[in-house]
Length: 81
Image 1: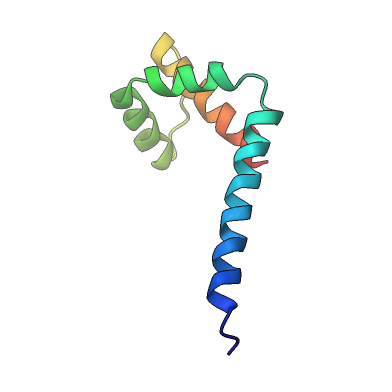
Image 2: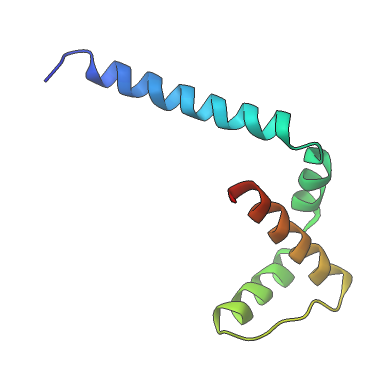
């Protein structure tokens, strides 16, 4: 019931967000490559792949767009694991 709790909690969230952002910028040397892939991804192909994977299909990337989607997934997995 501390009167300062909301302020401390808010500050903690800001610090957490800043720390994560700083980690991503300093630890990922390929940031520009990842950002480029993210900005140029074919969302239709990405959506199709995600639907097929959710249905349990085994999907082997064949086109350059599908390979780019898989590269983006690999980038994401390297950030969270």
